[in-house]
Length: 107
Image (cartoon, rainbow, N blue to C red; front, side, top):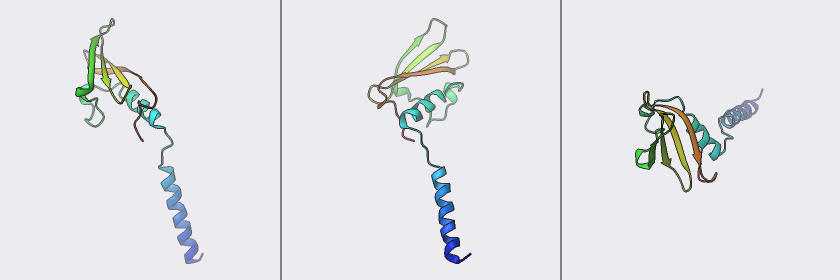
């Protein structure tokens, strides 16, 4: 192999590896993965960069099953809710409402 061929092959490998790291996930799907990814975690133990911001807490209500639902505002029309077991502080369910264009996290 010539030196030029080896260099071109190296660039090819670097390009392929770089493209493999790119995400094809949409901002809305990324938002959903983030919200649903909190299920099973203890609310007070979520790292600060992933945790819901308490200043965005709209309401906290007791559900008929004894759990608590915290509702948070996000961007525009987007709101997300976590259902929390009050005994363990574990998030057991998550949901959201609002426009698809507002419920986004850029990957």
